[in-house]
Amino acid sequence: MFDSVLVPTDGSEHAETAADTALDLAHEHDAVVHVVSVAETGPLSNLRLPGDAASAEEAIRGRAEEFVSRIADRSEAADLDVTTAVLSGPAGTAILDYADEVDADLIVMGTRGRGGIHRMAVGSVTDHVIRFGDVRVLVDTAE
Image (cartoon, rainbow, N blue to C red; front, side, top):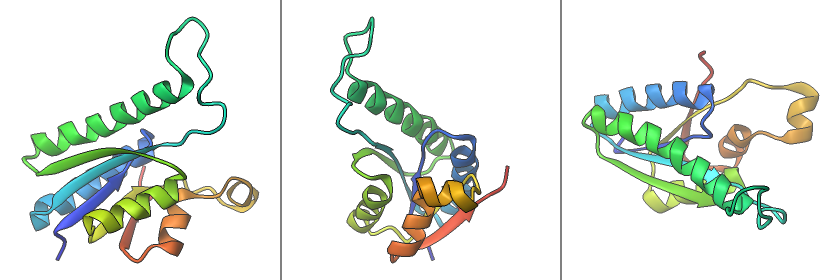
């Protein structure tokens, strides 16, 4: 039923929990796991960080690579085929573009379950993926 499972991560506890669900499903369906994180950068990301030679963009990208590596390591330990990527751009759009690129059958993501004013003001990557994608999305809200 699922040949390709996409697991976006932001390193949060919710994303890690969703990754567990995704790995279980991938194992059950013998699916390839695609783990991605989005290094969202903006106009200030070229600034140098105090006391460090790295730019903010390099630091953001480095963190995204760490997030991806953690889940990729778990995928490999579960004997699953895994590919990884660190994406750029607005997170929701980048995730959907990648899902199209790899022909993902399922996207498994976590959410913090925020609602109301916070969601209206900040938005939700998960909400964007659900509303604008044409791929099945499983939202894991377990803690």
